[in-house]
Image (tube, rainbow, N blue to C red):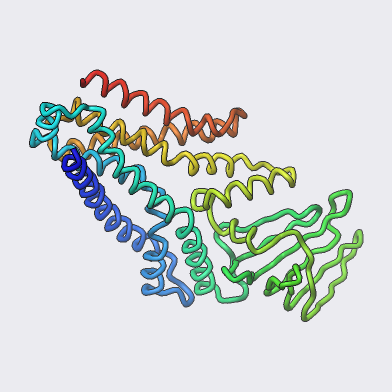
Length: 354
């Protein structure tokens, strides 16, 4: 039994490895081509190639369900075509045992990949985004692609770019009155977080609004006390799908405390938190297809079916996710329903194949 277990594990991991290499190659080429339209300033081809490589773990984390699904279809499909699965079952190994042997390496690979996506990829993506922006626009006068707006009570702040060490460029702070009119607007060329719990602003221009008139003040440096911290700004450097589970939960709570809508971050949180269950359900479907409809199918057909299953699953989640924000039902259900449906389909196909 141990020999069979090792053999199935090797087949599954080999299939996943082959698919992973294909995805990595395609991703690097397409991402590098996509970067060519953004080559300006000091941001050149070699910089784009380096940052494309640096951000690879984050992009692969998003594609992980496809990689594992197709990899399992390829690895187990080879065993099915050569009738090795039939021999295993004829020798007394149950279908459930084979399913578990196939799921273990796939889920182990998934767990390792999710750890990279949780603890490594977000920091690499932040570094790449900050480096790219600084190379394109320099330390002054540039615009951040996504914008980073934050609310701190009756202050609204925007930062153009943030470096991982807690330095930001292009800071604007708008202070509102009790009647929600702008009292003052502050622009600082550079700001750095200090150990005392405040921001040290450099080259500051402040505009005060007095009814029908304004006045302006310039300061070389000043302190800005705020509940906004570098950790909060680093979260906003990335899209929700690029953030770690911890950052998603933290920022959703922050938005709720500020009276703002955090449903997008809640939805992304559940999508990341339940990703291993999603991949487990897809693996179950892949195994059920190998024992059923795709038992003797050629490699191309198995890959095609894997892509279709992955697209249908992703489309269902993409439809239910925004629907939960529009109609107000739980984002947990929006993520969990496609997983449950996929797992149920896998179980039904396995039962029929026995």
